[in-house]
Length: 219
Ligand code: HEM
Ligand code: HEM
Image 1 (cartoon, rainbow, N blue to C red):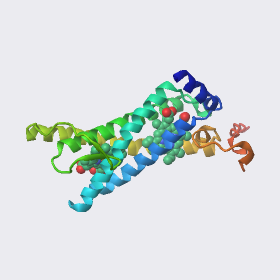
Image 2 (tube, rainbow, N blue to C red):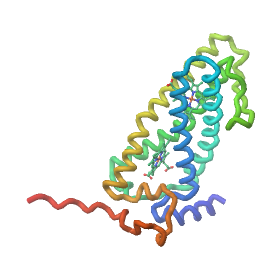
Image 3 (cartoon, rainbow, N blue to C red):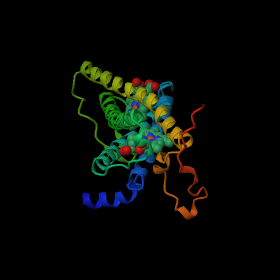
Image 4 (cartoon, rainbow, N blue to C red):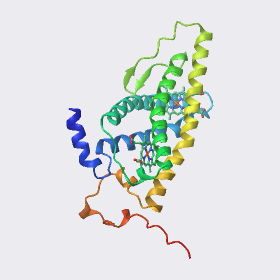
């Protein structure tokens, strides 16, 4: 089956494009993570009360979906190699971009798992639901001494916050690089991550992905 999937994906990756599965994973998860960052930030600044509890519930319900998507996406990434595009020939820039991709993959696991542990260590917020509907178990921390539970909560909270901070650092670099490659270098990287427009329906035709020619040397 993996061989057949790779074969199918190669029909896209051979043209420097991510497969529709890779594209769907990318944009659904990008949206979810950006939503969670905004929602979580707002949530943490609300005074204790019913609104805050509601924010916690939505935050956990949406965040748990990320774990499942992360498992699927990670499996997909290992089974089906991505495309080689114009930006993959840029030396250190390629190394940095690949490193950032792996940071993203790490955050896809670290954030929901640390959130799940925090939730399980707290007594109050109530049961967890995947996407707000499917019951989700908590870690069995209830019988542990309170001090140990607080210690676990502390570590998980640190991991959650450091990971959030890492995302605030790398997302602007990632998005900035994608826009720079598209608009300045005229590379095919961003096009490869967008749904494909058949050539005959593309109002820009072939014009937008011509590389920027090197500038003539003065003198
Ligand atoms: C998957 C993506 C997730 C992202 C991007 C994310 C992001 C955030 C952010 C930005 C904050 C606020 C940090 C601050 O300014 O203090 C936060 C706090 C929190 N998140 Fe998440 N989170 C995710 C998943 C989860 C999940 C799945 C749970 C629970 C099951 C969870 C539980 C919590 C809790 C309990 C807090 C409050 C921590 C505190 O008050 O210090 N998070 N999260
Ligand atoms: C909103 C603006 C965004 C744009 C324009 C964008 C654009 C891109 C592009 C063009 C690539 C392909 C890079 C390459 O092959 O060299 C890519 C890959 C990737 N992006 Fe984004 N991205 C955005 C947001 C995000 C966010 C918010 C995340 C994570 C939370 C993310 C995670 C990833 C990952 C993990 C890859 C690597 C895919 C793989 O090879 O498996 N992106 N993105």
